Image 1: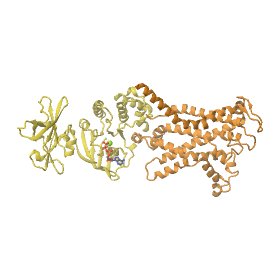
Image 2 (image 1 turned 30 degrees about the vertical axis):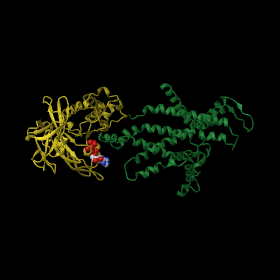
Image 3 (image 1 turned 135 degrees about the vertical axis):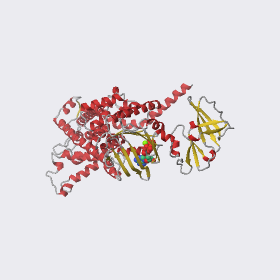
Image 4 (image 1 turned 180 degrees about the vertical axis):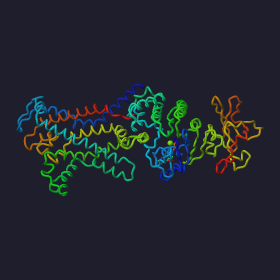
Length: 336
Length: 300
Ligand SMILES: Nc1ncnc2c1ncn2[C@@H]1O[C@H](COP(=O)(O)OP(=O)(O)OP(=O)(O)O)[C@@H](O)[C@H]1O
Ligand SMILES: [Mg+2]
């Protein structure tokens, strides 16, 4: 029963409200990603689930227990820290073994479990090293091994990939998802990287300034962002926002169009007036960055086969209405 | 040309370096190097039992005679006992205070200040304070209605303990500061990880705090032992090495050879004892380094 339920969870640090009435249900075996910009309260939320931070308000339920007054050690969770938090004085073997030792698992059982956790993360040859003798990626795997060596109610991960280089991050991302499915584990995963969120999560919960903005499967969040913040936060390059006045529908609405849904047309075509400012070629695709009449910048994603415009060209930008998101200019909430 | 000027500059920098070093070197030479070497020389001469008679060169014979004597062995035993009474107790107490003060509470700074305050007292002050407390007539014990006979500092079984108590108290501030700094250097996330890994407060102390603190503890043990072997002021002020030489530690025995109360000053003998103390302290440091280094976990 790896269900985690947050109800009205609030955390205040003096005047700062780090997490504001957060309601969230993570079901058993779900991979939930907590996503948001730096300082939005992701870590604080995770640390409250872990029991490392007291709640100002609300309740947290893990499995069938309300855990508000239960110490971290008795919550039956495993956490992977951003800093890894490996015990520097212990060998890799002893690090992985630590959570088993504290829970009084007999010696030979411990050895077997450590072996298998180390095996599944490719650490078998490193068991006798100290953390100081490992690379960042290896340390990260030790931290993971220390978490998966047990079978806890849920795994909590706070930006575990942020210290890895880009290539290793992509690889480990896939490994993590595979691991989660193999272990049938409940995972709550904190990140500020929306690519990580999109690729790993069963569902994504997006936070801003301590407030939950939207929860849903990646595709849904991508296709129907509930407000401008989510719309701009999800997707690379980010969604373009075009003032309604320029799009010919009045100033109360803002139009959101993803870069892949914009087309560059000739100045004589229908569409929004724009000037080509910069052209970025990424090899497999091209970004044409245009300036609108009110100096708003928009990005158009183009296939390389299309003949590019030249810098400084006057163009018209078109989009299919089916791909246009409408937001209220004042409340920034989705309309329709 | 270029290399030439570079060489010149280097030479100029070097001479400036030596110049800046000179004051320190002079002080060291006058107060450390010269006395140190002179000590060896003094140790080779036998001093006559009466002043004004000539000294006689006896070489290493004097070392053999003195270091083999019962009085030296007794003094050495006393010194070792003194170290055993002060170092473990001092570190255990300092540790307890450091752990107690190492939390985020309002007003904890006041306690930290109090706990570290004894660094600001000198040995002499500490000794005088405790002499008053131990005093059989005006002290704390008679005030409490306890009147041990003989008085503590005259009791052969308790005197060394009493002096050790003063020493523990006086060094507590330093030990507290050392261990507090060590504790604060332990990353918070290790405790958090340990908590989630199922460790309660006690397990966290034994499995995280203590091993992470071992470099600092090692340092505190070395410093404390050296300090114990060199303690003098409190013994001189409180017990004068008595009763029945029960507090006659090496430093005090060196000093006794130079005072002229009961006999002529004997710099030769004092020099030999001083060298013995030096060798012991040096050896102690080396052994501690060897033995403890193997168990010390240096963080990253
Ligand atoms: N111990 C603390 N005391 C005071 N304020 C804190 C504390 N911890 C966090 N905060 C504040 O709470 C807010 C949320 O912090 P939190 O660490 O949860 O952000 P985050 O979303 O994890 O950011 P990041 O992506 O940078 O890790 C921030 O404004 C932060 O300054
Ligand atoms: Mg964080």
